[in-house]
Image: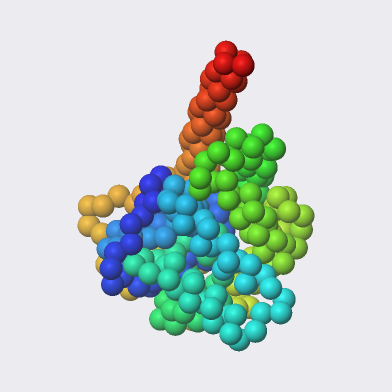
Length: 264
């Protein structure tokens, strides 16, 4: 995990549903869970941006079904089946869109604990607006087009933005402390009190281990990863890949045009 996509482990099943929004220490939380639960964690942001194309394309029908106002029992069953298949082989799921699919995940995994990572809402707002400014610019989207997996990021992003608007209100791409408060209130409505834990990664191992009923790892430091820096590095990585791909495309086109002129 971290800046590499996790590989599913046969037989592993979701034991923790990470309900915290992005920018609440979900990367550190994910690595901590991998240590405590001894298995791979599905951190949605990392899997979608660093995994194979199927990671992002398989989420899109799930989100479309979730957003369908006319969803019936049959289509819901199909959506749950797709979600279950996507998470097969993982011991936990963290980050968005998992944090917006908590009711569905609780239905699929009735024994899983729901843990919402928390952060000061003002600091969260600052971090989110920074990330939104990086991912929302038009040239970033254009640069991603030649990349096989991330060219799907634009329609995927529209679906995720619509889901956030449905749940939290507000304007697409402009989510601040009100969104944070709405998410916490929503969790308290949909998750039974005895199943919901709020946890700040700054508190380290002890409260998390107590919530999960496991021993504190001896001699193992708690993972400390800056989510904002991680996502900025990821964005820069993919922008550079996209620019290099565009350079190759223009070079090939240039050679083709030159050859055509020579042989006219």
